[in-house]
Structure formats: structure tokens, C-alpha cells
Amino acid sequence: YYDGAAWATLAPAPAASSGLTFISSTNASGNSFTISGCFSATYDNYVIQLSNITTAASPGKFRMRLGSGTAHAFNLQFIAINGAGGMSNDSNASSGNFFNFDAGYTQKGGVININSPFLSTFTTASSLNQTQSEFYLMSGIETSSTSFTDITFSNANAVGFASGTVKIFGYANS
Image 1 (cartoon, rainbow, N blue to C red):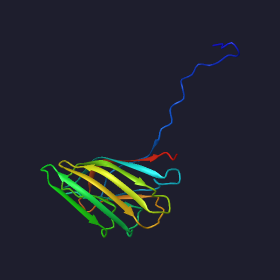
Image 2: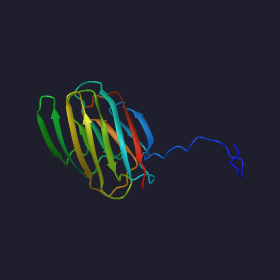
Image 3: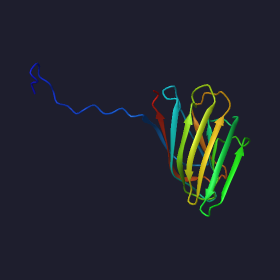
Image 4: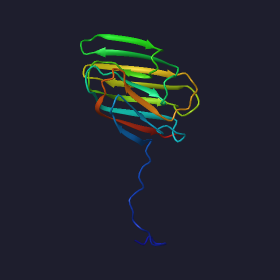
């Protein structure tokens, strides 16, 4: 159309910029799996979405470790509430795993927020997780000043993962 000064083209408005960017999606399989290169200098903070994680047998203990190595300093706190109204809590600084889904049920899901895994500083994380009959609230800190690029998920009971999806998103730096 002619706007009185020049010819102009009608076009759709530019897409809005998102504060959350998809990075990777992986199917849960085997006794453990690593997502390599998911943390970088592009983002300081990340969210991990766990959907329909199932194990080959019950109980399943879904665990997460930053990096692909085995020796990292960390501290973990969690509170679990079950369907019968029971509540438990724990503090763990010795297993080497950052987060646990320790319920004896096979379907698990939740969201984990990870702060500063690529930066050479402490890495903190928090999560809300749900099994078939328990709710978990967890927080943790990786106390080494290590820059991580990978994340490893494992099943501590060695019964293997049967299915499920792990998606990683980066929060836009502002």
C-alpha cells in the first residue's frame, strides 16, 4: 500500500522474544545417560523438564549429576510428602548425586531449575517433583567451582529406564 510518502509492504508483526529457549530433548534409556554440551556461556540458568520417567522395575531411584564424572562435592536437602499425609526429610552430602527421586514408584515427573552450571562458581538447583503418590521439594548446591557442560541421569537401583523424556531449556540472560 502507499502510505503517502512511499510504498510499504504489509507483513506480520515480528515474533515476540521468548525468555526460555529450548536446548535439548533426550529419551530416558539404559541405567544411565548423559546429555553432553547442554550448558554453555549462552545461558547462566536452566530449567529441566522431566516427563513420564518410568523404570523397567520398581523401585526406581532417578538421580542427576552435573558433569559426566563421579566425584563432586555437593549438599542436598529434600522434603517428601506421601498420599497418606506422611512426611520425611533428609540431608545428603555423600552419595555424589545432586538430586534423587527416591520413591518406589515407576512414573516420575517434575521440573528442576539449575543456576550457574557453566560458570566457575557454586551451582545451585531446586526442584518440584511428583511420583504416583509422593511430592518432593528439593534444593542443592554443588560446592566445587567447576564449569559443567554436561549432565548425567542414572537409576541408582540399576533396573534401567523404560521410557520418558528429559528436556532442557535455557533462561535468557537479561
